[in-house]
Image 1 (cartoon, rainbow over the protein chains, first blue to last red):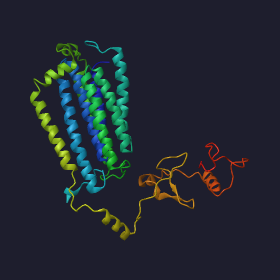
Image 2 (cartoon, each protein chain N blue to C red):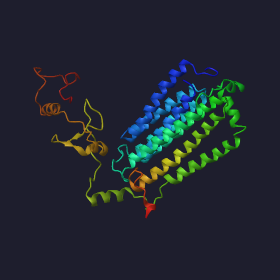
Image 3 (cartoon, chains in turn blue, orange):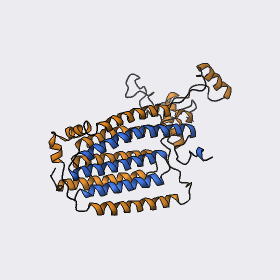
Image 4 (cartoon, chains in turn cyan, green):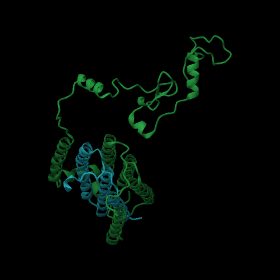
Length: 99
Length: 279
């Protein structure tokens, strides 16, 4: 095996995350799929850092983690607020802006 | 950890963790229940943490376990408990054919990525992080030096981002109280007026063998009081069936009959033969 395998694994995980975002209807599951995509990007960053022999990739992965944590907090608060008003966590429900 | 080429041990670690993490990711999109999805993602993230460790990134591996698996996924589970654990997907498609088209598009995207990125990668030698890690005495020290010198501005901005995220969560999750808080008297009056159960609900049954909320309490005539079991359990049909044989025995005992056998006068102080003990 070579370090390229890590990149290919991260591509596979990113694709699975994309499928989850496109197919699933539960807002929380969609959100977890986004988390999976962020994680796969992190794996690519870490593998690239090792390929190039400097730590910048790891620092960027660290920043991605921080941004993901902030995003999770806001996103879950939005989901809870949506659930309060619509009694459902389905992403088909919030269509108020349509009319 | 070798300088350039990954060792055999790392290959084993990679293949095991790669298969596990892909399986976890598939579990995420294939599970019907959101709780199962969350647990699958946590599993995937632990495997990714092992891969970070194998990639000479011990700091990120630990952060992955502590922040992602420990905090983020548990926050997901917490919100799932608030929203309702049985909030599974509906199979009704709002847009016809969306599922098939979505899968096709995503798989096409994946093939595009693999061909494009894989073609650009192939045969690239890895430099290895040993020199970069050793420069300041370790991985954590190296990351700290970068973080507090070259990336200092980004670090400060991220701090502002975290504070705004916390404030945003507070604002979004805040619920304004429109009506004044109802007093206990008003609540009880409303209960009487609307004819719903005026007293506290009966407690679930507690027996010698079962001491759990899924055991329904029994009314004086021996019938099951379904209302004594919490609503979500009732909705799922998770009532523990009543052991009718033991119940009949208990009733017989309480009516003074001796069903224990030839002993005529069981000693009441002896717990082993106490006739009043329910089964």
